[in-house]
Amino acid sequence: MLSAVTGPDYGGAVPELNADALAFVTERHLASLVTLRADGTPHSVAIAFTYDPVAGVARVITSGDSQKARNAERGGYAALTQVDGARWLTLEGPARVLRDADSVRSAEARYAVRYRPPRENPKRVVIEIEVARVLGSSGLRG
Image (cartoon, rainbow, N blue to C red; front, side, top):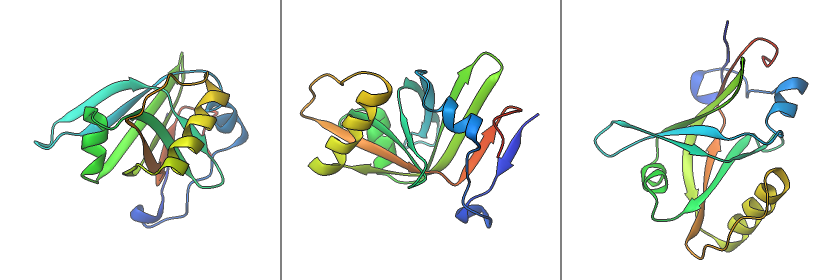
């Protein structure tokens, strides 16, 4: 069974993750990120991400010339889904690309806490998703 918590663009409250969901997004798992190409077809890739419950945003660090960054640069929505067996959580919302040094450093520091220090990449940018909708398996619902 799935649950949807709606966000501002869906006419509802800002989504909040319950304690189990917050713990789940701090465990070391990969996720799938879906963005849309210029022709409207989905582009899905495995990624590592961090979630900031205070700001309500998910962040993905990537190279600025990657397909996912180019897709996010055009605006629109993105969705990322983390799966571990029967547990899954999807975070959806508008995506944007941050290129400033402070945003990149902050995202790298968050990434290092959840995963490991990222490799050096002078072209790095941050894809930031303002979470507007949360879907999840039983137990991870708000």
